[in-house]
Length: 239
Length: 234
Image 1 (cartoon, chains in turn red, brown):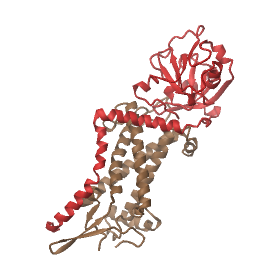
Image 2 (cartoon, one colour; image 1 turned 135 degrees about the vertical axis):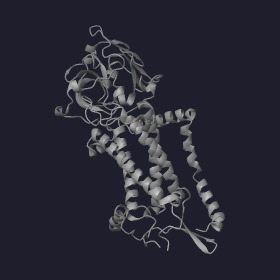
Image 3 (tube, one colour; image 1 turned 45 degrees about the vertical axis):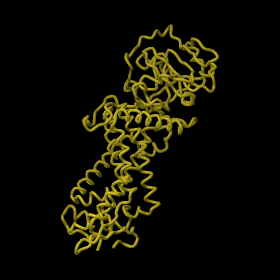
Image 4 (cartoon, chains in turn yellow, blue; image 1 turned 180 degrees about the vertical axis):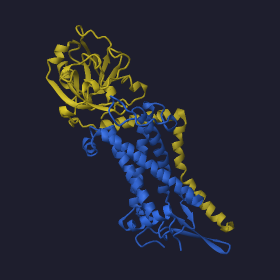
């Protein structure tokens, strides 16, 4: 291949074409830790935002036949620090605060006086495994009406006996399948599954299904959205 | 040069001493841009995806858990599940945007005729396979891509599309419950998502082998767009 004349014209042509790819160098920002971390945080926030956008209030999570249930002893128990934070079930109350007309201590009997919904729904862990469980409880929607929550509050924030904490955006909390769950497999919640009361929101990922609830706050601001969220997991994670 | 319904490729001739060098502009800027951006995205998606998979490296039940394989940490990105999710959820958007831009460009510019595998390419697939694997005679090349190449590139785009659809189902199986049901539910979507990764990695492996076999001139055409003396020119 003779190369003398080729060089002048085609080399400048090639250089020009190669330079047109230079915008790609922007991706290199992900190699600089100080720039990368805010970029990844922004990426997750954008994903959360998009996921909240395509959340449909009345679109129900699939429900399953009893024959499709994962047996209770095959329902994996994930805990934050202890399997059983020794809740005194006799004296337990739920502390309700924030933007509500009737704040205070609520007993399990009061929560159980609300209409009960029992459904077989899929529980998905962020790790990738999934089980189908049977959950019974009062709709969060009904309970928030019961305590007179401000209708346009933005978040529900819960605290747990094992120091875990979580939050739900109000649209997800008010979803017709979102429960204050006190029964699994038609039995009162066992201690490892969060007795006496846990969240069961089939439109949310597993780590948002907080157990051993002790307090519930209706609020517009959540400085710390949740234990795992504060370690870097997405705050919204709808399913 | 090319068959009547394929894209004509702009050709430059440069006088070099006694002879002419013929150079074909094979890859427009948009295609090269998407190619290299997608190279980065695909690597990030694969490596962070493998880190996510490490959190539960099985397709069976959680109890009892039977691990399918142990992915070496060196192949992964993100350090832990939360970090990998951040990479995966960020680059997913870049991956999707690149795909949308690429397909829109190919359709609007009508350049899709260069890589798209169509029915008439079917007859040319076997002769190419024979040539590659059994060292048969190389069929005469009339277009930028031979039928086997077109098949590979078209499959890669389809795999990309499927990787996004299965990924959406894994992320939001309730909102996209219809799509999830089409894939056999959340559980199976996770299996398909993994199979698609394997298929894409196989494509990349084959692609790299072919690039190495075909040399520097072929490689630089994806950087500058221009290829010197390609086979299909008279």
